[in-house]
Amino acid sequence: MLVAWAVLCIIWGLLGWRSKRPAESAGNRFMSIHVLLMGSAFVFAFMSRRILPWRLWPDTPTIAWLGAALTCVGVTFASWSRVYLGTNWSGTPTIKVSHELVRRGPYALARHPIYSGIWLGLVGGAVGAGDVQALLAVALLSAAYIRKIAVEERLLRAHFGAAYEEYAKHVRAFIPFLV
Image (cartoon, rainbow, N blue to C red; front, side, top):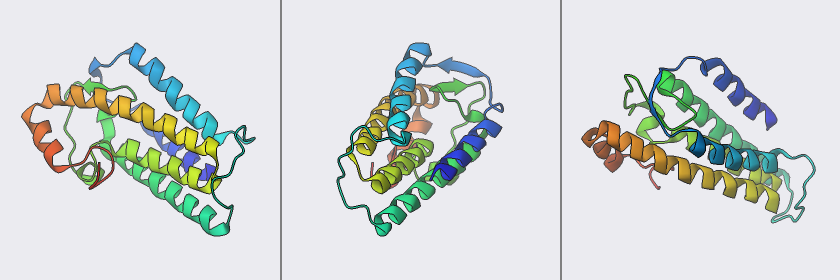
């Protein structure tokens, strides 16, 4: 499933340079901790030699295919969300100059669909790997996103006010129709 993740990285690389200028940002201290959590998650997820080798379920073709399917769906959803967000995107919780509140496309399903997709992709990898190390990767990624969503929500509520409150009433933050 490295191909799916490589495609995601290519999309980010191609779109990363087109972004509006920041007006307000969470700052470097926030990002240092975030990068540490995310980096640790992906090191555990993609480390070829497992350091925590205990399997949680059998290694079967069905489970491998299920994991691959979840990864592909997650990476596709994250990529679609990134493309849809366009110039409003930033790796750091940020309000951009002329920031728009995007509520269409994947943003009609979840307020943070990029995170939802990347998380689902990593869950798919954990299902396929079936070991404790992969679950640790999901836990670290979850912690990073819970923290980042809280900061982004504060920024978006402060910037968009009642419009964001109305949006939040109708669209779940992370998992469409659930959370």
